[in-house]
Image (cartoon, rainbow over all chains, first blue to last red; front, side, top):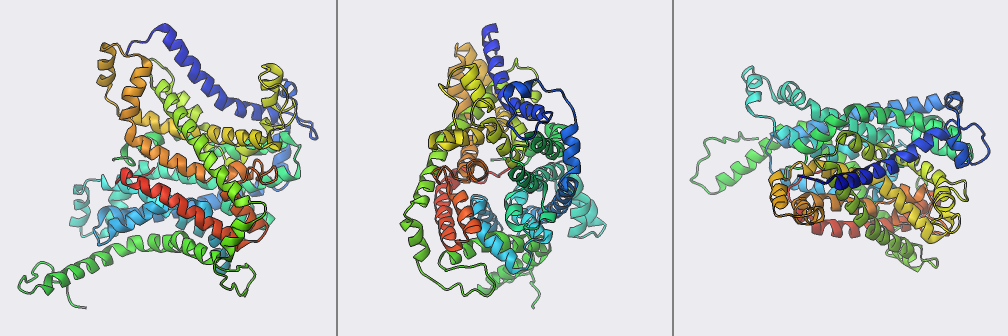
Length: 277
Length: 320
């Protein structure tokens, strides 16, 4: 494709302008974390003339149990991630490798469920978790995160699992291995890139989850990071430097993971597994 | 339990194959059950049962107090929703449709547009662009909401007002974005589009790899311009992906919650409320579970009908 120099400049100008629109709010946020006055809205010219310093970050880390909320998020996310991955993988294995009556019917019903907006389920979910006596516990959160994620993870993994050649199973079957051995020795190792991609998606989704956490967790000491930041904002509404310092700390793990793995996960998540129309 | 005798089913009696089929199915289920039982049970309890429970609550005078009677009240909750003197539900319904009508086309167009430009052969640093465009997607909704409230702050201290009013003079005066209906809606739309457009860009960037390059070369020979190639080749070739993208965008626009709840809380005077935020506020802040469930049920039916009609086009394509 031959493009004139003028055309190239226009294309670059548009996509760079777009990139600036996406990056600018982040830069403005980071600059604000260097702003030290706590009781007024930082004026743009003040924000643009700040000197970088870590004062707000240090204050936040020592203040308001921030480390505790961070650890809460780590615990909630890691258990939810492990549980979701395992359950998603065995369910997808069942749907990918076995034939059984009603399989496609169940799969279709599951597909429909993906289109029901989650917000509709929030009231009954709260009632069910309350009936189980699990409001204000992580067990309640985990149950809903893990069980609620099965369908999406099943959809994601099934395609990968189905693309694993049957011949690979033979070595295990000849050794007298059963279905579990095939799962552990063939399907899991063969689909590590897909599992890794899914792990990052789940990590990202759970790390920032606010809807259930807001509804199910009442105790201050159990709050996860997003809720803690929201409450912090309600409490110190004008303390922009510290609010955004806390936000930057909360964002770091997700953004770093994304930056490191993005090339791998977008490709494997999209091209190989998901949309084989 | 009799042994299935699968291999040697005698074809003499018609009932035997049927029975064999049943036994075969039963055996297949027994084999697969250890792997799918927990997944299906979990989905039944935490995805499917809640929908049924939601319908039940919508016909009850429901209270979360232990041992509450929760008596059946017929259509009272639905009546309450529609007879509300402040017409909150109808306002939220109108806003929900408006959000879909405004954000879906803009989001879709920007996604294809940016993806096509980034995909142009001569563009360097494609990965860097893709990463930057996707950044808002990996950022948490709550944090982006706080950030947007800050960027759209009242007066010239808000950086958006500062740029649009003070620097560029596009706005005649500094706007109190969240205090007026239309400015609040525009802020909500910009927030939503900024936060989600990267998803479409990344999907389309991947999809564009699948378009055969010789189509463009042939068009070049025929002397087609950029716009012609975009509308005549790119858009038609992307159609299957577009169905997938549009369904997801529509679904996302129906599901507006953080966009409203964390930005305006439905204000000013519940004017910017959408159904999800209204449901949440009615249920968990005003404890009107019955009417909130009634709204949820009606919204569920609506979204279901809208997406179900798209399902046939969607076929066996799988989701991300």
